[in-house]
Image 1 (spheres, rainbow, N blue to C red):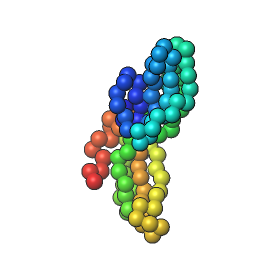
Image 2: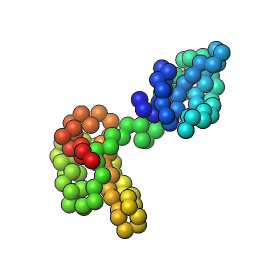
Image 3: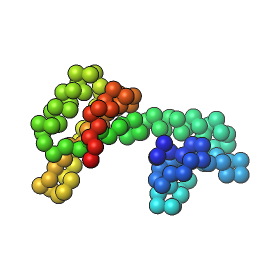
Image 4: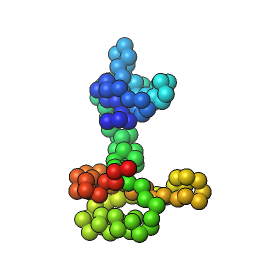
Length: 122
């Protein structure tokens, strides 16, 4: 809900639907700048488009559980996710520069309900 505004909730950055004079708009907002991406004559068409777009957003269903420097710690967490049958996704980023790589772990969808105890508090 922090990246989508479907029912008028405020977001700093993301997409939303807005009724503007009877015309529905699918927009993207970032840093206070709003850019309309699509227009729809009916609310139904706008909602169907939004639902399809959100479902196709590979980041919308990922829940961040932690960032790790140690490969051993990553292996422990991934092993536990596998043991629990929880789908996950990882990537590596240069956190503090090219000599400081970190692995981020995300749990897919509702799997987060079974991984609450694995969320890293940092």
